[in-house]
Length: 162
Image (cartoon, rainbow, N blue to C red; front, top):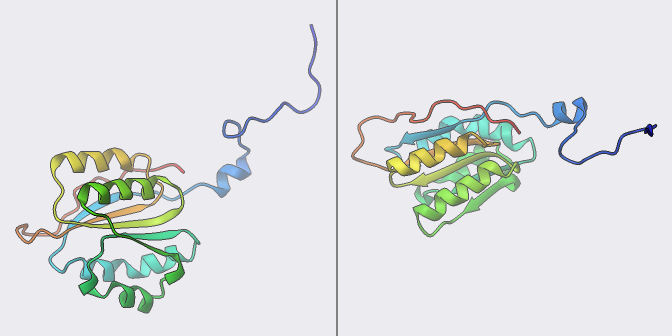
């Protein structure tokens, strides 16, 4: 029987030391869906302080199909968001917008992902609930649905491990 002496070979991604895990641990993340009556301006204004703090981490703040009329650039800049960390995505339709949101949430390169859509159906809500399990960023879906009565969070808080 032979005995191996010395350091065991390392396998990337499987065995990580405690320092690596501590350095790459993330806070709890969630995906929240809100019905907006202001095209997302009020919601973005409420989030702006948090987005400014997140932009200092060096990861992206991703905006998917924001309404130009709300003046999101000025709003974020006035709040102290690092504009060199804001990534604007223009999707052709809601299917593409949700796909882009899913990729941005799970990539590990974003701190926050905010997407503007007309309305989420049951299938889309379920898809985002599943994405939330592996999300590595805060996610906000702003539904521009004038028929809805009150803004409401539709998703429970789900913890994501990064």
